[in-house]
Image (cartoon, rainbow, N blue to C red):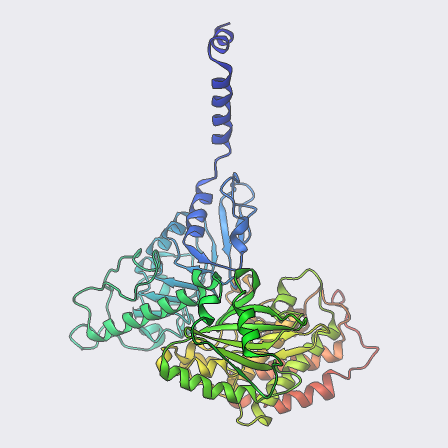
Length: 572
C-alpha cells in the first residue's frame, strides 16, 4: 500500500526519469571497457579499426581486437597489430588486471612504455615491436612472472634492460633494433654516469605521461644528471616522434590544397602524364581525407581521378630540408626510369613547398595484405602461385637487371599491389634508401618491417640483396599460410611464421602451414614452394639463393606441377 501511495504522490515524469537512470546504470560500461576507452582516446589516428568501440556498450567483449573470458566477461586478449594506430599507449591499459595477451606490434605508437603494464600480472605475451616507442623499459615489466613471449624490438628504446626478474629469460631477438639499449641480454655492457662499466639496476625515472598526450613540440624534459650522449639520444627519439606525428597524425587528413599552393611544380617522367601541370595541380587541390586509400611507412596514399577517367595513386611524403630535397629529386629521376611488368610504375611527382607527392599507377586490386587478411573472398592456389611468381620476377629485376641495381629493403605483403586480374606489382622500391638519407634522421633498421627482417639486418642495420631474399621467403610463407608473419597464433607459441615453419619441418609436418581455406592446392608445387621458402629464410645469408635462382625454381618446379597431384588438407 505504501509503495502505491509513493507512486501516486511522486509525479510520473520523475518516476520515469528515475527508472531510466537505474536502467542506464545497469548498462554502464564495465571497468575494463572504461580502460579500453582511455586507450582509444590516446590514439590520434588509425585505419578505422576502433570506430566500433562504443561507450554505450555494456561490455567491450564484442569490440574488434578484444577477447573476453566467457564466464567473467573480463578482457584477456587485446590484439591490434597492423592497424596504423598512432599515439601513445595509455597507462590505463594497466587496469586490465586479467589481460593475458597484448599485441600492438607494427603500428605507429610513440612515447614511453607505461610502467602500469606491470600491473597486468596475468600477462603471458607482450608484443609492442615495430613502433616508435622511446625512453626506458620499465623495471615493473620484470615482475610479470607469467610472461613467456616478450618483444620490444625495432623501436627507439634507450638505457639498460632491467636485469632483475623475468626479462632476463629473453634473448637478444626480443630487443634488437633499439640502438640505445644495453644489457646482458644483448651482450652490450652498460656504462655508469662516470663513464665506467657497470649495470644500472634502476634507470632514471621519466614522467610516463609526458610523451604524446599533446602535439609534439620537439623537446623533452630529462634528468639534469643525464649524460650528453643520453640527451642526444632522447632528443633524437623526440624528433622522430614528432616526425611520425606529423606524418601519420591529424595533419594527413586535411586537404592537400596548402601543399600545392605557392610554388608547386610537376615533374613528369618520359611523357607518362599526358596532362598539363595546371590540370594536375587543380586536381590535387581537391584531395582530402575522403580520398585516402592507404597509409604506411612511407606516407599517406590518395586516389587521384582525372577528368578523362584515368586514375592514379598519389603518395604524400613530408619533406625534411633542402639537402634532402636535392637528394630526393636525383633518386626519383632514377626510379622514374625503371619500367617493368611486375613493378608499380612511377609516373612523376609534384614538388610542393611542404611535401613530395609521388604519382603512381593505380592498382584496383589493392594490396596483397588486404587480399590475404581483410577481404572475405579467398585466393585460390593458382592465384597465390601467380602472385608469388610476379613478385619474384619484380624483385629479381631490381636485383639483377635494372641499372642501377636496387635493394628493396621493405618487402612485405602491403608493398605487393594487385591489378584487376590479381597480377602482382612490387611497390615502394627505392623509397627506403631515399628516406635513409643522413639528414632525414631515419636509421636503416626502420627501413623494414618486423617479422620480415633477416636476423643479420636486425643486428647490423645493413641491407643487402640477401636480406631482401629473406623477406621474400617470409612473404611466400605468408601467402601459403594466409597469416601475417607475427600472427597472434604464432605469438602465443612464442614464435613467428619462420619459427613455426621450422618447428613443423622437424616433425615432418610442413604441409600443415598451408591455409586450410585455400582451394586447389597441389602437393608437388606445394612441396617445391616450401623448399624454396625454407632456403630463402635460412639464418645464414650465404645459404639463401639469388632472386634469379628463385625465379628459375619457381618456373621449373612450382608453376608446372603434375596436374593430377592435388593435396587434400584434410587427408593424413
